[in-house]
Image (cartoon, rainbow over all chains, first blue to last red; front, side, top):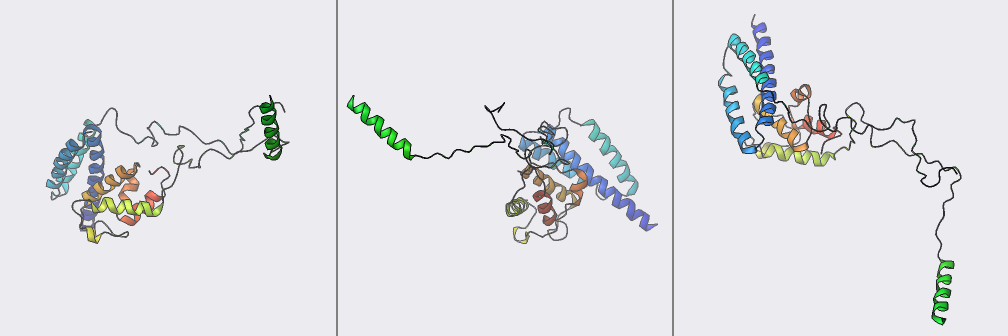
Length: 111
Length: 131
């Protein structure tokens, strides 16, 4: 029974960490100005810390509520690194297939 | 008139001695290698790997400037939670700081596994688009 509790606790911890990471990213989408980002991330951190000692059921409900909040706060135009999927540089200049050769013979075509 | 003739003779003299190598290629076909380095499974942007020492320096710099970290304990193979006494949320913040420092996007699955400076350095040094 206690191993089930530990397992569940471990899973909840993983979910909480993932939720924190994603919520930090969402926060950085909205709060672009750095000082604003720092103040808001402090608040977020205190919220996460305050609930760290809750029991199993309570954390379950908190996590669900947190994930709903994350969906609610999703940014319409999030910051994505340029070469990552969804960014502007993603697959922009694909390399040539190795069978292709580049002929650099300007002016000597037809020879 | 005489001067023009003199200049012409000097030019001819110079030109007869100057040798410019001429490359006569009969085939006319030059094969050039494929563009950039091939990191197809990641993305098609041109990939250049960072030097490992530079990565180490920058990673340790980031960790040292983190407010909850004691600077003297930081070395290239330190675990965040065990040795530096950081929380799991602090680890998340440190990984975010690495992402911002190097301009990489670390997917969530990989970010969970980065729990020490060692792993962070290895990940970033093997990321082709790290700046």
